[in-house]
Length: 378
Image: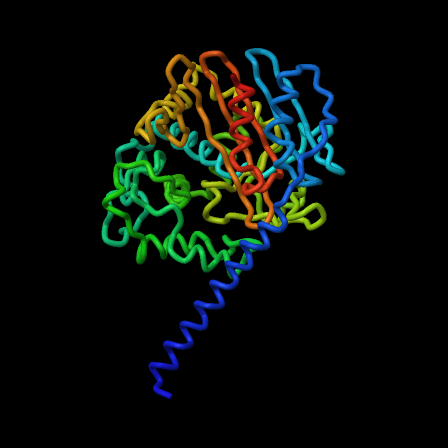
């Protein structure tokens, strides 16, 4: 047989195996994600809150799933914990339980950026290449602002992500180290010039932002986050999660019995690597409503349009609908088979906020955490 034909058939065989793995994964997800409606056993005095929670969660939680909710209404704070057990939604105290917050981590990262701008360390319209210590592949002009508002033209994820996910479902980010990031920026990074200036959500872009800011301060992103946010605002329970501290995080389930793996995001920490509990997230949300905090105010200013009624500030999505107060919003999700989802909505004018942390898989959630957060804040 011709050697070139052998090589071609070998590649075809590999491709077929990858496709079959992906198809099998999709069918597995469909099988494990079937959920029957739950029975309402919640004990919540406010009927509107009780009904909203049940409406948006009863068909979207597996047994052994947890949801922690915090509501700020001016000077009042309420906590609600929900667990699905034996197909019933029940009350449980979760205010101290730790969850992965997923992409809500991005607004922690942009909070650091805003403070560095206020401190005079950088300006938003500067390009990052001068701070990295090496030239970027093909010399793209990428500014701090474009990374923070997703207009850089960078892909959502770098090349090879699908392969890494298939080969390591339990933790696709294992090989994404600082050394990998430096090499990728030097030799492979590309931008789509047609997308430059348009808001196209990018986990990779936010990770490049965190990586660059850590380089500027000659430290790790973990220490940067600790200094600028966690220690500064006494968020003593929050941390960048990794293999050494994942045991602290509440368990998520692939099904009612199988525990899901917890991702450790390595150099993608700025995009989704923070673990926190409701006590700390209430502090973070309260910080966003402090009109005297110059850095927060800067982060909340619209910098680009996403769609008709949504803009993007520095990380934050800004919802502005006619006859309604402007809302700050972000959500998050981690995990391939089972995992964590979250949502945060803030009404600065009314000094209201809703934070939701959960062990509901993103395929189960189907946008219902965001709908619940919006319903509760209004």
